[in-house]
Image (cartoon, rainbow, N blue to C red; front, side, top):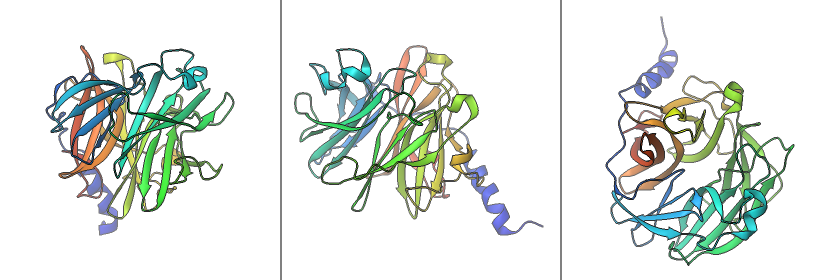
Length: 311
């Protein structure tokens, strides 16, 4: 006879296996990759995404999107040693609005390289031409056990954390100074790792809901069009600095990760995700592929079961 404590994980898994909901309606310029969404103090939505100069799109209603231009329209020479280009081809920006200030963390690297770095910038409007370069946050070189890409900022009360990383030994965490936006120490904490598929895990996001911190990541292969196998996974912990397990109780440091969203219907390889809190609750932002390219996906997330379900 099962005890209630034994049934609970099964009920959580059953909830997560409900029919998959497609992306919510978006219109306008939505061809993005690795999107991050934030909201200005005046209520305007911004999406920043991977691209030459980092692309900026805005929306008054989270539905209709307009391309506004680039964070770095004249390139980002301070990143050239990592991108091996002179045009500012930058990855996976992460935006957060603190008061009236936009914070934007972003990565500079090339595919398969650990010669990588994370930088950040500030703006009071979020628009092209308004950004100031705040410099290097953290970096890695060939031979390090992790890779300094795919930054995500978590502000938890007075504590600031930056999750980052991919492949090698997986997802890491650094503590930041809230005054400088840069590391408060040299300590690097491991949060999640895989051995399957050459350790394919990246694009971490830590999101707090209720008493839990949820660590989202993208697994498997990105950036191969409709051959992409990207999918979004999650684990949770009572601390942002470790102890994450999936719905079956498997540690994320041992390859655990509960599926949140994978390929379904005509939606291929969803991933590169971000999560923000809006007036109607938590919002999942991601890219997915069709035969026409990579596009913006937006869905609400329901945490009522204790685990995030796409709504």
